[in-house]
Length: 434
Image (tube, rainbow, N blue to C red; front, side):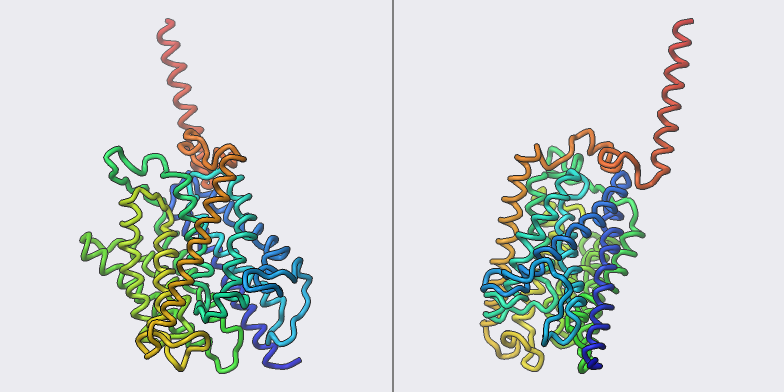
């Protein structure tokens, strides 16, 4: 067996594992950023929907993206059986697993907009629909020799394909589901429904940061020249700059170094560099990440001012930063690193590549939002609504959807309180009767 083929396969397999571990990062991120009464539900549905996404990707998703077809969609290679494709440069099953992980991440991002109020059945049905009708067409247009690829669209590891797609589906969900109970007051002011575990959130960001090396550097798909190291450096620098920028802007504007903003700044930097990590110099990766850290701060405030309840900040971290990251290649892509499309505006390429990037953002974002909104609207009618009842939401989805708390101690405390209340009522009644 060719040594390069083997080394490429090993590298991409390791990267696939890193990306799949990011699902664990999202479990902790979403759980820590929401309330304790929904923790078990969020952890369970995230793992389950990744399982659904994996099966759907095997059945049709891979073929719709990478199968032979036309400029709009792939039409072959369904129900992938483990065969090898000549000329790929690495094991095809390894490439298949790597792409499975990307599809699962995009779905996980989308579900950030459903948090704390959607029915369990809605997650299950939308997981299938998203994995067939929303993610594959966009991925095919850019990564599967589709029409945007022909125009030279630059999206090395998925600022548009993965992050913007998931964010636009999340936006459709937040609009249809409406805000959580207690999020907004009658005077339109917002209440801070704080997540229950900031330590979980910080740990999740670290796990995602590490996993992103598989996400971005793994997308080189090869070890030749060790270019993956350069991509990894750009990834790390952007995340670091995003963290610092978010800390500074929160300190300047609100007078405190807000921890949640700082953590989301790191993620915004990672999202933004995902499109451009292989096309820009290291100094540009710092600029891209820094701007993303500032952008996410103002984006969060923008959506909240418009009474859009986004518990995980998916719209800002993955949407706003995904748009900025996609456009950034049209500014900073260098002639030496431009393997796809044209150099950026600041390197003598004019507005051509920036225009292609903007076209991709508008078309892909609109497609993901419109199709998601339409599908969810149909589901709302067929399934008798998307949202749990007010009582179920107040109780928490752990109990209402699964019958047990993610933290067993909560159930013990609840039982103890109920027992104490019953004893008190019983005692009062006895006192009255005597």
